[in-house]
Length: 257
Image 1 (tube, rainbow, N blue to C red):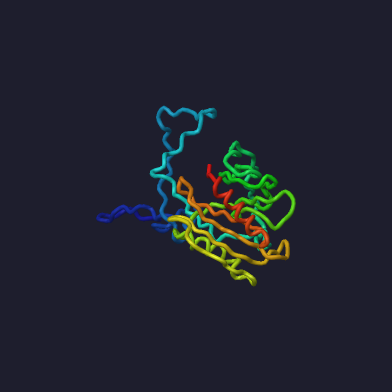
Image 2: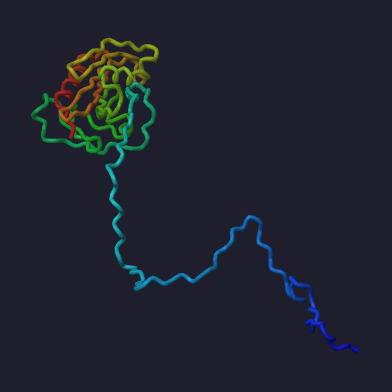
């Protein structure tokens, strides 16, 4: 039998059923955290804000925050342009059309046989012969606005606004006609300033529509509001005087809106 404790011998506790520091028998070891896992803070329920009201589904959206400054201005460089639609060298227009044109009450300011048309989309008015009209299928994009006779080809007036490019008017015309000047048969007749701000170019080149030679006059003019515009007149070389007459009527009546 077991001896009782003798004198001087302490009464020891019973021997434990498992080693110190070990889990009790039948206890699953805790799952190991994956490597690199940040220690997680205790997840506490979020506190409800005081006096919280349910959202109003009919409330108007809040106004956007005001901008700190003016919007960035886009500076478009629209040159070089494709000139000479009548000459079969311009690519197809990229969809946009400059709207319909209509008569204005300015007919008293133009020579007999002319009418003043306003291009609603492009924002200007100009005089053209009575039997001319807007060519909507050729107008738009970098081409600008094109007017032609109702019947016949080989004659036109092309108008577009200059945005960007050189401050020198003659350099703008040279750059805008660069694609034509590289063609066989191109011949520049003159180039020179018309005043302190404008310039005129006159040239001839083969006309793909009539299989003849076209005479062209291009004029860069500055409007009273400071905007710059180019007017290009085309016609058969046998009608050089008529091309000049139509250009004079167009320049004398041209007004941006």
